[in-house]
Length: 423
Image (cartoon, rainbow, N blue to C red; front, side):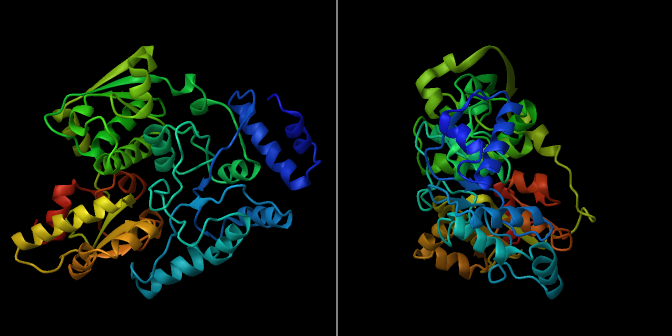
């Protein structure tokens, strides 16, 4: 990499040994991917490692070294969700022991460390940091040092910011240094589409299944999606934000997509049209039959495949305010059909702390609580990492949670029927 005079001085240790180590790491990272230079980070970071797993001893040592060197991020950063919430996601004594004493034994220490280097505030723990209630919303063209696949793909695709799919610790290093290596999705060439996805379904596809199908087909490449705008329109509104959040998360977890373009809708697709598609782009046609094929391909990993679900997670990634309102109405209608007042399956809906705070002031919040549904800002993935808790029959409408756990995926309409007493 070609370094500026200031960057070379940092690498040479003129601003301290710790900062030199960070620079050396990022230079080697850039060299590995063919980056020629650094670009300046222009807004707040978002970090994926939000959990204090006891085995991550090198992380806590590095954090102490950063703190001792007096380094802080120039912008306050947000984090992925916390791993535990005993108040809203209750569990037995054995599960608590595993969570607190074995799995996430360093959670308190780690959060204290994060606060010292630039954590935004106590509500900064969410995978949907870009929502307006949270406030870490990049602008078009912003350069980011983020990790968390669902947040990165949203920022790149829906907001038009620029960020590579970084890993944990690299996100911290870029945020601290205020610089990231320029390659991949930070370049114009790296943002060009090499797949054309033709959506030919009879109605708006389930976001999670459509995203899953695309992710598994294109893997880490960039898709340009045609035909979806006829269902979603050509403006980004609350409904579209909710849809694209879940769609993108599925492309990123079932594949490794860091950026997608949707014709006539997402900013770069609207700005450049088909000019952003490479000439040798491949084509993938998705119709109703293809979506059903993908849906039926998901394995059921429960020990007893016919077990009754003991827990339902809705909100991975975290739900938007609009989705919380909609889910309340869906559950209310389904309970009335079944002549029930409360859900039959223990149900947890997850959302960002600031979104939950806004929702808590609504009539729908009181209704949802009265239905027996709990609302949390937990990370469902971190909960299911507990072999005892995650080994139980859990259902979800999240393709990300399905991919990273033994949870069983159901479509939204099926989920609401199951939790409200239907088959």
